[in-house]
Length: 281
Image (cartoon, rainbow, N blue to C red; front, side, top):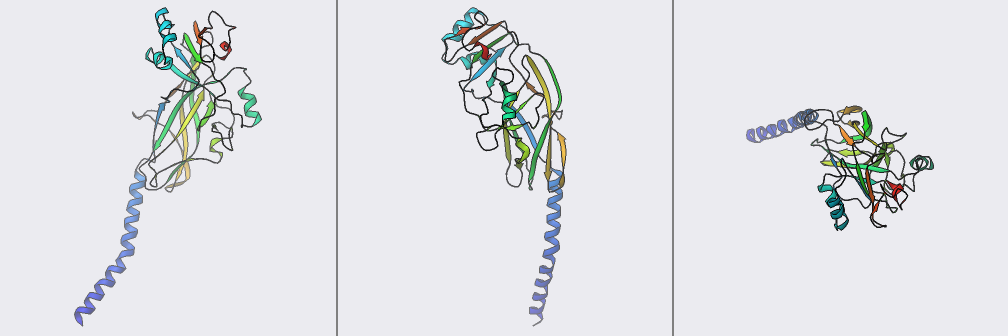
């Protein structure tokens, strides 16, 4: 009887200790979770070839390079090997509100975007939600590009992601993919969530700099999590711990050399500025 009672007493004591032990372990896990960075961010240029693109170079092409460019079955890769920097023709957002499309077509020229992918990663046990961002420390200077080669848009479809101009227009960044809400503020009812078993998330961003300029800028993002439900703004940093700087380019205002091709034969717009599609550059 004594042995039975002793065993029962030990079991009851162990049961009674489960509650405090689990609570202590949960508190410890939360403290550890809170000590980890809420997320890290990497920004990489879009590497795939856009359907419609323009390439800018800081020098003009030699006669031999022009010959090889025209003969190449892959002009995009050839120009990239020469140091060209690609831009993508920004698709017209046909389902966007009229106010946005009016601004989009005000210049009378096709817009070109410098596109990147932003990847957000987190090891947090609990969810972290990024629900807003803003451009910071924007500086622009005259483009150094001397040559531009374009494969102009033929009315391509929009890609899933976001778009903004520099400086941002009202309500930007906006949603670009062909769904309900195109052209509306992306963070109006959307967010990027990581943690809680979801290690990564991201966005494809089309950024449009003023024509003839190259800009550098940073990003502040607003996030909420279980440790900071009221939310917080943070400046994104690079892998060296310095404020992240993103370079965004446009085509030069008056390039010394410019070509278009695609739906038309190779056309030297620097010699034939009235040529078909030359106005797209």
